[in-house]
Length: 204
Image 1: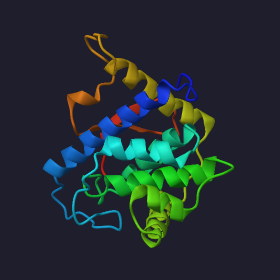
Image 2: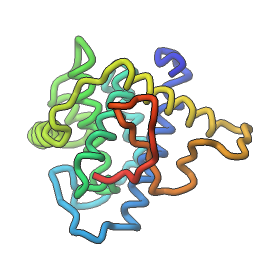
Image 3: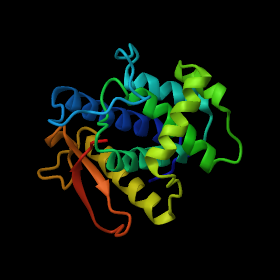
């Protein structure tokens, strides 16, 4: 997207990702699947008191990872969502999925990064739990951590377009992509054909 190093860009990206995940989580809270849902290590006993946006802002403030890590973390969450159909993102697991995806992205992308114990402290969980989350997340991804430049650009372009659409007072009669049309809607990319994409329901 424009310039991830620009200090004005990241707050907008954090706000949009938070809003997107909030919609998806609330949608899955209200519309559970007909089939039994899997309870995983990401599932908390109660909903965290901290909002998704505040949690993501906390990660951004203390993780000190490169801005690109947040785009890559989004790619990972999208891949995880497509592979794990029995585990929809909801209010009980979204926070743990967030801290894990950012940590894994930082380890893969950055030359220097904090260890599991530090990320556990940032995320408000134990180091042992952080290790379990990382392992389960990696298996959930099928260890598909590589993000090609084309895929990265595709996701950045989508994020940039959605952020622009959300900026007032822009009025678009019929936006080509508008997640507000359906709380279940989520853009999943076909990485085999980066130039084409379609809306699918975000489900894990």
